[in-house]
Length: 416
Image 1 (cartoon, rainbow, N blue to C red):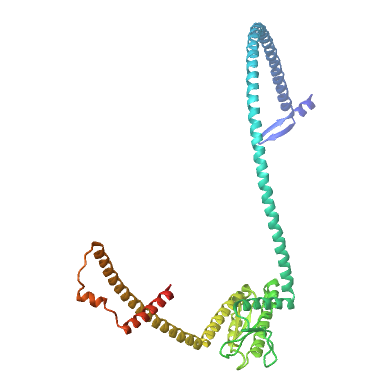
Image 2 (image 1 turned 180 degrees about the vertical axis):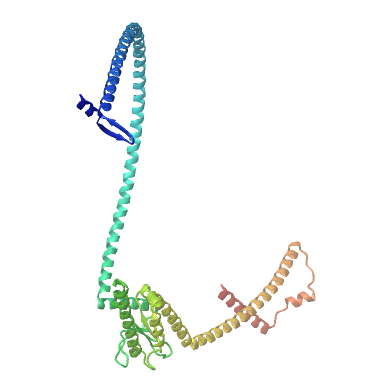
């Protein structure tokens, strides 16, 4: 017993100044167990009471449910009667609705048929117009393909140095031939130093001829266009500048001959875009060409220059023919003076003819008066004036009057 008491009094847990022994721990556990047992009993009692209340409530709900089911069955019977009446009404309404829907479907079918026919007609017309436009598009496509082929041919021409030179030569020749008369220009003429410019324009008044060169170097220009990167473009630009300088120097050395050609020669550039690019980005080349007395011309500038030369040639031809024109004017003035003299003579003849007609009218008036006197049988002695008027005329006057009458007759015949 003492050992048991010592075991139960042995401390197990120390909480601050409080020491809890094993006996205290067991007593506390017994109290906890009794409390739990009491709580379990109370819980079981409450659960039984709750089940009894639930059973009573369930029975009450079952009675309410049976009453409600009876009401539902009664309502269902009433509903079945009402549903039968509603079914009859719905059947009649459904028949009417079916008939109305049938009529509307028939009308809609007619309208749809008409609309479909109109739509079909419109579709056929649209298809016909579409076919016409497709035909136009096919024609345009054919023209585009033809143009593409021509562009390819032009690219092939420009890719070859010889054919490219021939292309520039042909453009220059077309411009010159369209603007100047035959004989005022010559293609591929030979100068005294053996050089042959592409065109030599003969200036008037034995002035020196104008030389035109059409062999523009485009290899370095194409290299500039094809270069990628600033370094390659710079190298290509230097090559282009070098080729143009060499070409300008060749034109100045070969085609500028004292007394044989003009002091200025033309360097023809067959492209307006290349011409604009040179003046925009290669101003030093333009200045060098001016110093070398070489003018860089595009097709439009060459055409304008040819028009100016044409005006100069026309003015020179008019100056050459000025003496002939003056001679013709002198002869024309002589003819005008001769016509004026003859008109004045004709005017005198007409004046004399008018005087003679007045005299004839006087005589006819006297004859008329004598006829009237004869008709009224009024005779009187002739007066001195009548005797003089009826006296025979002088033979010389008669001859002159005869010649005047013949002259008047001849003038009248000429006038007729």
